[in-house]
Image (cartoon, rainbow, N blue to C red):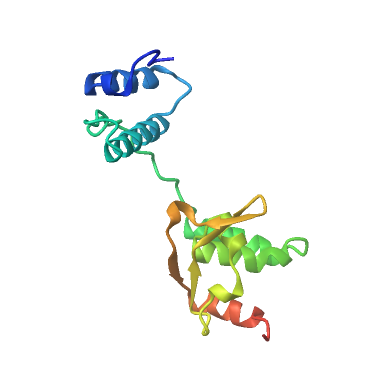
Length: 167
């Protein structure tokens, strides 16, 4: 292990930076993971400062640069219409049509769409609240614990109104 017999108070900023570099040299760790570990170390030292166990936090200024990721290339409008048309025209796929249109129209992640409930819909079905996700049967807060409201097109509003249960 990196720290071996080092005590917390003997960890300086230069030691913290060497630890960061040591983690980055491990090819199995992504820079974002290394960054998360540095953030955790920083949090530990902040706690130690509050408890008066350490005087200084060597992790405060230790940063990990993470290269930006290219965003996925979304479907073009022509591709979307082609996909939706395939669902409309195929008897074996038609029962998925509303779901496919809902997903394309809202841009929801799969887990968000799976977690969506009627209580998350406005009374006029013109907007929906997204704040939960469903993964492996477990319901939890949406990504980054951030909720949002998604406005719906007239087409999606009508789709929901046609499907809305009586109660």
